[in-house]
Length: 156
Image (cartoon, rainbow, N blue to C red; front, side, top):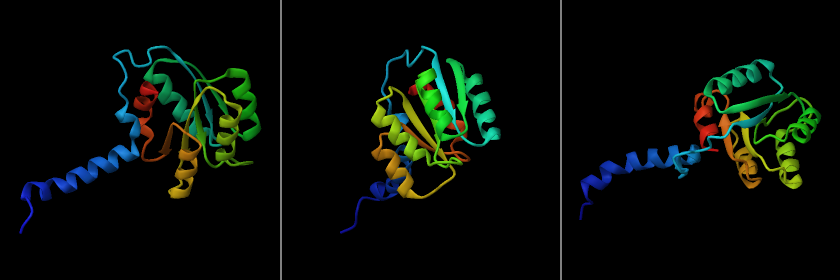
């Protein structure tokens, strides 16, 4: 008995859609039409000044950003979190002096009321799983997902 040829034809399409939605879960957000119209305060924690500047420019150009602050190490990030109380934090996994996942853990334990998007060039699934367990709002590849950041900021 043969299966339905339409089902077989749709399987690769469904798999690609599933993988896309798994990688970009924020697309499933079902908000109202006024999705986050208020302006956001953002903190970027990354030890690469070139990347920080590039991300700051992209965010400023996307609008709805009130303030962007930066930190390039763990200690500065803790001070900036206390001082600026950001709505959204972009956090690099690999910092010079400490792991960004450790900072994510501190953010969650301290119960700062902010969303955290992890940034990396690292492809290890263990990092992604750790970030998901610590309730990060996203996990983005710096190279491949960079252009999707403005849309993500709009829905968070």
